Image 1: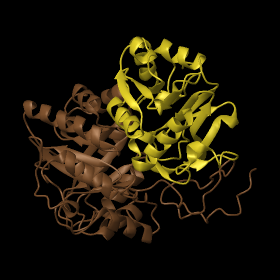
Image 2: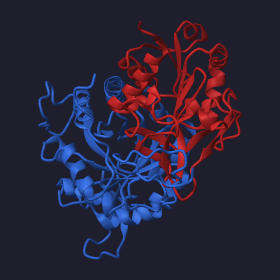
Image 3: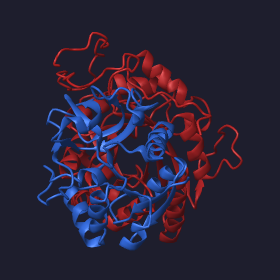
Image 4: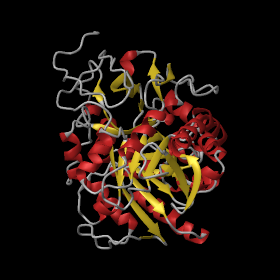
Length: 298
Length: 206
């Protein structure tokens, strides 16, 4: 009973601190299935007034500005999860976002998170009740960290993401560290980004969405040292964001940066890189990925 | 015959997604908030996301607890998802509230060495002896979506239909006892494979 089945695949190299003492008892290993939790590939959609903001040139959409239709397209294309970033400011526009969320929940069969402008536990509850799986706090959590503990107690830490925008204190000095910036990257706080990630996880955030403000928009690749520092400092999953320019950048964030998930926006929206290409690049590096399901299944 | 499914809405689960999932699998699902609405359905679905104690408290406050007890006593089909499945056991390491105690077993946490919560798509593997279980047709060996830090462990290992290996533990991810099926993963969030699992279950009720 306690022997490794003879057809068990050689265990793939562990990307994290998994002790590797996987008991094989009562598990029938499917030799065709690659081991381990898949690294998630996550397109991010910026939404304002119910419309996707950045110009989208995604394949064959009737209405490329409709976030729900785009979400469906990404679901079909094999995205593992979605993030909506609500970049509206006013509260009446937030009601429009609630409608986007509830329609998305009725249309897609993968999980999705909503971030942007979340300030209270009530905001979180509304989004989750509308059908979101997770909500992301950013500035409000930096200003009042207890918000994370309150939200985790109310809705469960697994539904609470802390989004952290981090910037190098001195791009010329790799040892200068990283600071947290808020208000969409406009306001530096002086606070150490690694310490903030650790504290946020301790308070109850179940996941960290880590964006490198230095790399964001450059398409030059992720800030791997930042990713490695954060993933070493916390025991919750980290979503890597900022800098994706190629499929291999995303694969490197998973393999070399220890990211549990990788996020990108424009390269997906403009069709420069497909979800499938990212997964191929990851698989080529031995990173576990979810196979893209066949399109024609009912 | 289209089966009607009552998705229990006790403010602690993603009911919209559950409804969409069961509709896509061929049921006629309705989100219900009262015991009367729930009793008239062919099958009960207990969604659940969040903290064990707060889900349990919400369930008690909803007045839907008796519906679940009655359904299981009467051998009616019940499907529990994530915490909605965990609540059926006697209790959880996550909290102090007793569970419903309708299934023998308890709910445990991943060891501290694991990255927790366990979030994402992980492989569902047939338990020993369950390789040919119709529930797993087109599902075994595939990845489904998980988001949790705790998992249910039935007292009787024969109730375990499938397991997933994570954090050094081969934990039960699909359990069945009598008319009750529970999943630690979210079939309603697991794309075509999740829909397949729900279809397998509904078709098995025939």
